[in-house]
Amino acid sequence: MFSSLILARLKLRLVDPIVTATGVVRSRDVALVGIEEKGVVGWGEAAPYPNYSSETIDDVWEALGNHADDILGGAIPNIPLTASAAVDQARWDLAARLSEEPLWAAIGGIARPIPCRVAVSGATIDDLLGKVERAVACGIPAVKVKVMPGRDVAFVKAVVDTYPHLGVAIDANASFDHTAVDIFDAFDALDLDFFEQPLPRDDLRGHAKLRERLDVPIALDESLHSGSGIAQAIELRAADLLTVKPGIIGIAGVLEVNQQLRATDMAVRLSGLIESSIGRAHTLALATLGEMGPTDLAPTSFYLETDSAHPSWETKSGAILPRPAVGIGVDVDVDELEQIAVAWGRFTRR
Image (cartoon, rainbow, N blue to C red; front, side):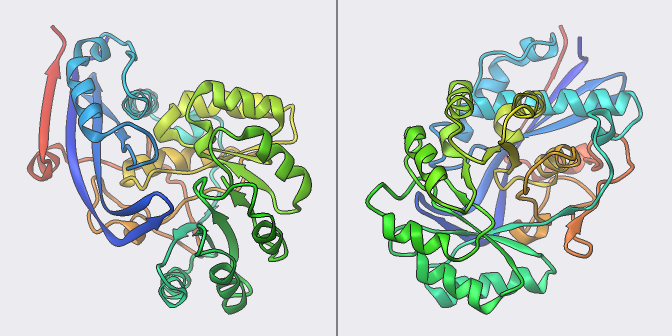
């Protein structure tokens, strides 16, 4: 079905380390997937995030190479989720390029500015405020503060008090439990945009109860690693927002969840895995669908020192604008990519 498959493994250095309840991340290991037909290449990105799931970049890279023939034949094989999502992304990008339209238009989106929100963290309050100041200086109108036991209410209150006009959300990465009632109540009093994954990933009923008790909208993320997790969250009405990642469930998966939520009081919230401009472009395209909730979307240079595609995504008046260019709106120089890749593969249909 497809003429060739390009695989490139990259190590992307972060501008600042990202500190969460699950650890510290200083760089991102990603695998780019290029699918070619009729001389046109569509691109996707697999970016397994450390400690977010059991997937590793080694798993992803091995699976993509081992299943190259299946991918070239048009199948999306049973491979790690981020690898499968990258194949799905590449196919959507390729289809849009072949039909000579932007991906956002191909999925029924509307070209509109998508407000930016960046994730920030700090080992101390001063460290955190320094990260927020950098975001504000970049014109970014909203942040998501990483919280955990010991780095909780005082940290967030400092941000809210220092930047009263900034949109502030929080993400606990499943680090609290039901004993944190007083902390949750204190968060609730801060008029936050949303509270993401306060409880362990398997505690959907606990999240549903918390949603009933707190005014701040509850978002789920880690609880949604599988299709069954998403289905259970919808059945239990366990959150106001379901944080889904195109880098895990692909374009098709996000569109399916969005369709399922239309008859509920819940909404999709898009987020990423700290990807390069390729993965970021797929999130941006989906964000143009009008019913999406608040999106985690940032200029590429806010997180990464290097990029995989051109031009990188940057902000204008606190938002990122979808481009009228075909496909995902960024281009890849294959020769340049081969030079910077730490591993490389090109497969052709037999």
